[in-house]
Amino acid sequence: MFAGRRIAIYARYSSQLQRESSIEDQVRRCVAFIVERGGTIEKELVFSDAAVSGSSLQRPGFEKLMRLAEARPAKIDTIVTEDMSRMSRDFADSADIFRRLNYARVQLVGVADGIDSAQRHAKMTFSLKALMSDMYLDDLRDKTLRGLEGRALAGFSTGGLPIGYMSRPEKDAYDRVIGHRIVIDEERADVVRRIFRLYLDGKSLQTIAYQLNADQVPPARRGRYRRKGWVASTIRDMLYNRAYVGDWKFKKRQWQKVPGTNTRRYRDRPANEVIQRTYPERRIIDDETWTAVQARLADVRACYAGRHDQTKGRATGRQNNYILSGLLYCSACGAPMTIHAGTSARYYRCSDQKKRGTCGNRLALREDVARRRILGALRQRYSSPTSIAYMRKRFAERLGELSREVNAELMERRERLARVEEKMAGLADFIAGGERSDYITKTLHDHEAQAKQERAAIDGLVRQASKPVDLPSPDVLLERALDLEALLAVDPVRGREELKRLFDNGRLLVEPQPEGHYIARGRVFPLALLSLDLTAETYKPRSFSAPGPVKRPDSNSSKLWSSHGCAGRI
Image (cartoon, rainbow, N blue to C red):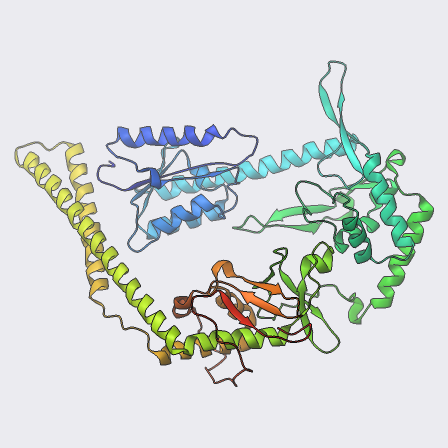
């Protein structure tokens, strides 16, 4: 059944509470299944995802597996898994997987449930199995919520707690833990009281965050979130949290995964579904302080409220159209540089310095100057005779590497085809001699299918090797650079993603200099310009006016640009 086929194995378990050996157990069972049916397995074709839910397709091991299956030609012929729920527990995603693998002509086999996508009625059995897996998740979700509701009604903890509280196990008469009672953590409660007191003293949210970071106060949710320190948004959320006056709510929000991803988003539940309880023993903030703080919050909100009751400084759903956002990073601390408004221009500042005050880099960087200098330096790089000669040389070297890779794969496939044809000839001799068992007939059909696939792959490689490829001319390179600038002008969001592909890790480090300017450093991949998707229906390539004088970068240096000037200039 599996003789001569390239077989991949996929294993997964979903919960961190499960044993890691679960992966090994699944793989061992799949290997035994494959060997028993005449197949072999290579270590590099074993893929797994540990502690990852099957309700999402965003899994590193699974994504690598699907890339091999959907390659042209496919790098694998068969995928074996313990059961179909390892591939996915979502009904829609399962149907999508089945359709994609069927189109790629890759067989999917489940060891435990006996599903084989090559069989005639596989679609029906696969769909039933996928539906059962999806219903299992729904049932598990419902029972989990029911248990949490019971914990909440009994006054026990149901998960994460606000800063200032902790949970202690409560046991029954038989010394069994029946729940975790929520109590005040006095050490952290003092931090809560300090925050409320500082706000009443007239301190801003950001000033409070700076002061807590300066005093090295451990941030909220230590060990998991806010590892770099306090930020203004955390302070704001605490000031609005009624749990500090003893009013607790459960089931206020319903968290759901975005289909096909591991991203979770919440929706507010109807008011009649929310569980509300008052616990005087959990009160940290007295009524007088709470009322005064809420009054000041309301005053500040009213002072900065804009049109349509939008609060100044809050996101309004508008996309960030600054083309360097997400590309520039502070060299002092590694945090991203984020955009901020100035009196006459927009400036980039270190986000850690701005939000937390934990970075010493206070130098601002004008957005328009940075944009002009970086694009100018890139255009100069792609128009410099030295750079063009280097890129053409690297392109020729890469063409040679690709040619050798194609020839090696072509030779390997021809040898594989010869072995398959030799096996087919032996089976034909068996049949000619009167041996016509079902096993021999099916094995011959399997070999014929594999030989057909190998011939198709060989033809594709031959066509690929015969296509002429010209080295990019200087005009083509400059035109591509201008196309990138034009795309950035009409579609900054998409253009920004293409621009980031030119740099190692999609980032540039900006180094503040004592003289008051920045130097940007980053590793540039010149040939990546030829692979960018710069097509757009809304624009036509056009010429741009040359930027100001830019120092020509050394071709062996990672410095992209530099310029002297006052703070705020590059």
